Length: 109
Image 1 (cartoon, rainbow, N blue to C red):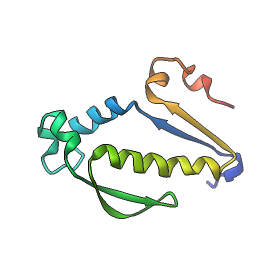
Image 2 (image 1 turned 180 degrees about the horizontal axis):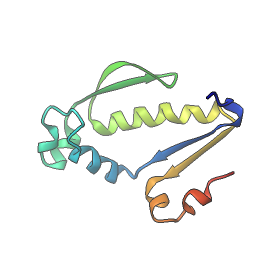
Image 3 (image 1 turned 135 degrees about the horizontal axis):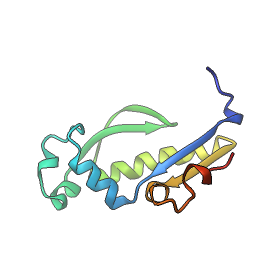
């Protein structure tokens, strides 16, 4: 099924930096080289290797100063989509879960 881009709603869901960081630190599926066994303070200061993005495509691996730098790089890449599509919404995960944005009903039709 192909969806025309001009008729597709692109939704970027973002978490608060702290809850995103805590999720990354506790996930077993994230390959962290043992980083997730450290205290959160050590985890956030450790170097991180992750996907490098350009033109909204993964362009290989890149070393980041820390996991938050990687997050910033990913978010910048994702936000570029906003200027390239007709329908774009950014939703805060916490607002969606708490019903502050009306949940799915709060999204445009």
